[in-house]
Amino acid sequence: MTNSRILVIGAGLAGSEASWFLASRGVSVVLAEVKTLKLNPAQKNPDFAELVCTNSLKSLDPDSAHGLLKTEMRAMGSIVLAVADETAVPAGDALAVDRALFSKAMTDRLRTHPLIKVIDVEASDPLEMMRELECSHCIIATGPLTTSPLESWMVNNLGAEDIYFYDAIAPVVDADTLDYSKLYYKDRHKQPDERADYLNAPMNKEQYDAFITELAKAEKVPPKDFEDWKFFESCLPIDLMAERGIETARYSCMKPIGLELPDGSEPWAVVQLRKENLQGAAFNLVGFQTRLTYKEQVRVFRMIPGLEDASFIHLGSCHRNSFLNSKRLLNSSMTSLKFPEISFAGQITGVEGYTESAAMGLYVASQLMRRLQNLPELSWPKELAIGALVNYVMTIEKPTPSNINFGLLPTIELTKEQRKSGPRKKVRKSFAAKRAREVFEVFKTQL
Image (cartoon, rainbow, N blue to C red; front, side, top):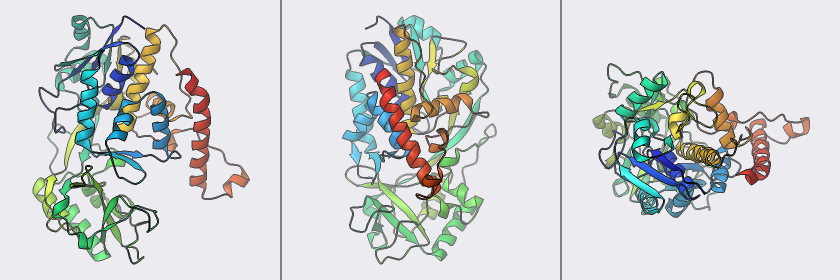
């Protein structure tokens, strides 16, 4: 197809997708990854495409924003979704995976592809690396924790303001140490006779109030002198929710709606636990990202009914996430305005989430593929999930990472009859999903 050789820096979700997309179409790829040499503070193992924060790739519902994104990714031959399907664990209508199996399978696929050469190295100067490796183009997909040498190169050479925020990781508990007499299985809004994947810890008002009080006053890991915590609003630490008000968590990750107890009554609040692996030997606390010190995590989280004697396989933590001001530094194909041979993919472009990051890897690789074939850049309609993400990062006034949601898609104007057909928000989403599928049916012929 082409004699070009492409350097991809970073074997996370975006880098893995970009490498696989190009190699599957006959392009030689050099995939550079530093994990085998040293791990960053958020990483646990040297395998590729590690899922750090949670094992969920969000909803499979075709009418959801994440469902639309997955449809587009599958049409582009997503390796992330293919491997996720193979390593999936039960998670209701969400796609969740056994993290260890997922990363191992991704690593094996990439390392054994005949057109992908993996090199274990810490990148510092992509232009120099391209020259040394005889590559015509480079995709930087180093994620939110880019190593210092490469980040310094970007700041010094792109003139980028160092915009950043902080993310947090939820703890994981040993399934054998839970008191199941205080817990029950139920998925939100599923009927009682339907098989449930989530384990629930119910709280009454007294338990909830005491829990939130302790969360708010518990000792946190303080930021360093040079750090300024800027959290992504859709991934707030549970302790920060507690600080914002007694009811905040109850209207977020601890909401009881749709999680009635076996006797039909509704608890005051609920902590949901999701299987961490296929064997069900561990559960992660859904939405319980935290800044608490390890000692305080154990103390406070054991206040949750059923977790009084819980053993924590790993505890939560906070870590720095960096991203570019894409609107100012890149064009719509995510290529550097200053260095046209360099593109950026994944979370570093200003998207948030596993599937969003992977989707941007596919998007950037597909645009680069067209460039190698001397074809013009393909403009993605804003009505599509990927198109909406690209439009968002290229137009947002103040750069703020976002995951895919219907708020990024063009507004649907409802007729008087449509407004009467149900709750306005739900109806609008339904029509937006229908429009996206129709637009994609026509658009995908160009891919």
